[in-house]
Each structure stands twice: as structure tokens, then as C-alpha cells.
Length: 407
Ligand SMILES: *Cc1c(COP(=O)(O)O)cnc(C)c1O
Image (cartoon, rainbow, N blue to C red):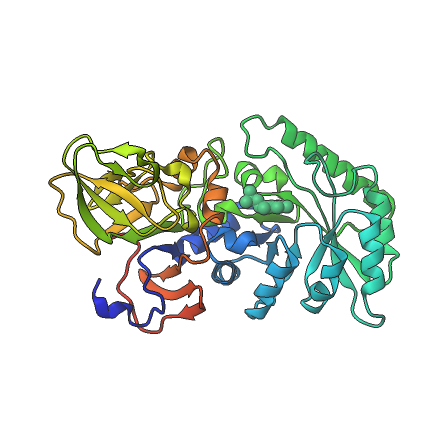
């Protein structure tokens, strides 16, 4: 990478996430080809697009066959509207009445699961405006949010006779679609079918029916209905060890940094807070400007490793808030500014997202959504950085940049 190539990138922070938009586009297209022909695709971009950046992911997904978007909160929906996105946006989570005016102004679709919120919503819609679309959430076994299966038809009827509201969809959510044993998922599907039948028996159109997340969609066509909600696997991440991605799908995010210091550690010297690592001989170490405040979890202390000069550099001592020390092989030629792969895509020496999640005793969902706002996201298209999102906002890069995904 030439130094001049970075001129147009507002942030030059060494620690950065590279987001391969071509991977996201390819993953979306694979779902488009794989699901039933009439089934619509909802790209789930909550939690800032699972840490990848909601605006760029949403735009990419819509360009490559997604029909709708979903986020968790009204705020997240408003942010997409502010970026000029005009596709339908479903708010998946339960809302508080105080959020209703913003939601209506931004033309967001709301999930409702009880009579109270339906009544409050209906009373808020100004008379004479077009009806507000809502999706009825039915709890078929997650025990989190939604009407009961038996109560769904009554709430659907309440929506149908509420002025200003339109029942645009009916949905549910699987609790265990990523587990090897599919029994619970099939039971939830049967409960969803019961709720839909009850709604129809009351002579009400349930609208767009949907229940599948990534795991259910990857597994079988039986869960497709009218729409599938694709989150984790849009980003090229398998939902669990029991559910594989389809061939051709690949991880979009990798986390990179650079060596900011190379130094020697004498025998017996302790490294970082609490001296939890002590050098056994004359050792070399490198300082990497990434820490737990970036989303590089402290539990990775003395456990994880990074890729430097095609070798594995083990984390030495505790991960600090902003910095981490790694060990270097004694004969390795490493200097200030050398590239470091902190989280790879499984192809090189760096730990993959799945490796990092295992070491951190969590799931890849939590790793990607923990990557802090201060870590710039560099968006790659056809091998070039086309945009950067950092603390100052989203900037497109008009100058060609030679940075590629792997170095
Ligand atoms: C997050 C979420 C999804 C997407 O789940 P993935 O496992 O990431 O595909 C779908 N539906 C609801 C209700 C969600 O909250």
C-alpha cells in the first residue's frame, strides 16, 4: 500500500475493520437463488448491521435482491431513513409509546404483540393519514415478545377494526433453529400455522407471513412462507456449529491493525497489567493499538493470537483498554507499521471470527456487534476502499485506493 493511497480516507487509524461489500452482495444473491421464488428477503441490519455498518450493508443488500429491511429499534430505523433509504423497514423489537411519533414520521413498520400498544398506536395516528402498517408478532415458544398463539386472532381482529392501522404481516421467531435437533423448531412452526389458521378463520388476512431467521432459511425450504429474515448469514457467518453456510457464502468482516512498537522483554519481566505473562527468556514483543474498548475482549488475554508476517503472534499478558502486546518469534523481521490481522476469515494464520468467539466463550454475533464505534469501517468493493465510516461519519472515497482485503 502506498502512503499516498490513503489521502482520501479521513481516518488513518491503524485499527480498522475491513468490510467486503462483494461478500455481502454474494451472500444475499445466494439466498435470493436458494429460497422459494415467491419468498421475499428481509435483510436484518439491527445493531448497526451486526457491527458492519447499517447504511452500507442495507444499500448493498437492497441493490442485490433484498426487498425489505429490519432493525431492532425506532432509532435505528430513523437513521436508515436519514441516509435516504426508502424501502420498508420493520422494527423487530417491542416499542415504547414515546417512540410512536418518530416511528410514524419515519414511516417505519411496527411489530405489535398486545392489545394495549395497538390501542395507543391507533389513537396516535392522525385522522385522514394513510393507515400505518403493523406486523402482529406471535410468540410460538421464544417467550420473549408477542401475543399467545390462542390470542393472536383476537389481536388481529383488534388491529383490523382500529382506525388508522393496517395488518400488513404476521410473524414469529424461532428459539432453537440453529440447534442440531429440529424438534422444537417444528413445534414452533406448527404453533405458527395454528395462529395463522385462527386469524384466517376470523376472516382476517394475516398479510405477509414470516418466521425464518438465517438458521431456518439455511436448513430447509419448509420455513420460507412469504418472507425470510436474514441476519447473521448475510454477513457470511454461520448461525452455529450445527448449521452450515451454503457454498460460495463468505465472511465479510476482518479486523486489522498495525504494529506500533517493537521491543525486547528480558527474562522474568512481566507484561501488561498484573504481569500475568512473564518472559521465560530474551523475548521480542510488539504493541498493537487495539484493546477491549475496541471490542477486543479482555478474556482474550494470554489466549488469542494475531497474524503478523504470516506467523501467529500470541497475546502476551492482559488486553488493555486501548493496547495489546503480542509475542514475536525471535528471527521474525517486523517493523513499525507492519500489518496485523486481528480477526481473519479463516484463510490465513489469524483466528477466525468463530475462533475468537470460542476463546471469548460467546457467539460470533456478540463479537461483531461489540466492535466499537471508534474502529473505522473500511468498505471494500472490487478490491478497493470505496467508503469509510468513522467517528466523523460516513465518507465515500472517490480516489482509487490500493488497499485490498488481505495483505
Ligand atoms: C435478529 C433477528 C433475526 C435475524 O436472526 P439471524 O439469526 O441473525 O439470522 C430474525 N428475526 C428476529 C425477530 C430477530 O430479532
